[in-house]
Length: 285
Image (cartoon, rainbow, N blue to C red; front, side, top):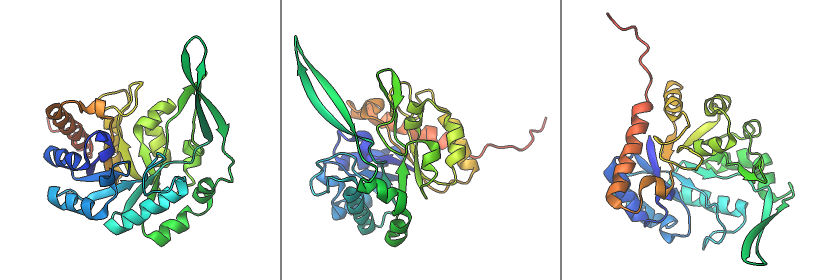
C-alpha cells in the first residue's frame, strides 16, 4: 500500500492533507504527531479517516521537543505515541534513533551576530538508548504494535561526515526487530541504497520513500537514488508493509494547491509504476 505522510505537508492543516491524499489516490495515511493538535486527537483522526476513506496505516512518533501533551523525553514520547496507535487501531509506529549529542545553541557577537552550535555527548546510559538496546522487543510484544526504528541522516561537520544519532549504521540497525528504511537518509550516508536494503530487508517493516539530490526529501521521481529499482526489489521480495511518500513541502510545490495535487499524483504514479514484479517470461519473436 502507498501512503502519504502528513509531515510531507506540515504547513497545511491535517484535514487538507487528508483531502489532497484522497484526491490524488493514495491508499492511506501516515500521521506525524507534531505541534498540530489535529495530529493527536483520536476521535478527530478517526473522523478524517472515515470522511476521506483513508485508513491510518502508521503513526510517526514526534521527533521535536515541546509538543503539548507529549513528554519531552524520547522514551516518554514513544510510549505516548504507542498508546495513541493502540487507541486508533494502527499497527505500526515509526520512531527515531537516540541522539548522540546535546546541542547548545547560541550567538556570537562581534562585528556582526553569528549563530553557533556546540555539541556535548549524551551518555549511553540514557533511558531511551538503553530501552532500544534491551527493552524494545518485549515492549512491542506487550503493546501488540510494530515499532519500526528509522535510520537517520548524516551531516557534514568541519568537512567530515558525522551522525548526530547513535546506532545509525546498517550493522548497528540489524539489532532491532523492525526497521523503517528511510531512503533519503541513506542518501546522506553516501552509501549504496540497494546493498543496504539487501542487508536489512528481513527487518524492513516500513519504508519512507523520498529522493536525494544533495537536499533531503525530494519527490520520489526527482534525485539520484535508484528508487525505481528499490521498489522493484520490494515487490520481488513480496514486501507486505506500507510505502510512505515522505517529501518536503517545497518538493511538492506546496505554495500552490493545484501544483501540489499534481506533484502528489506524480509521486504516486512513480510508486505504482515501479512497485511491480518485472516480467521475466521469454518474449515471442
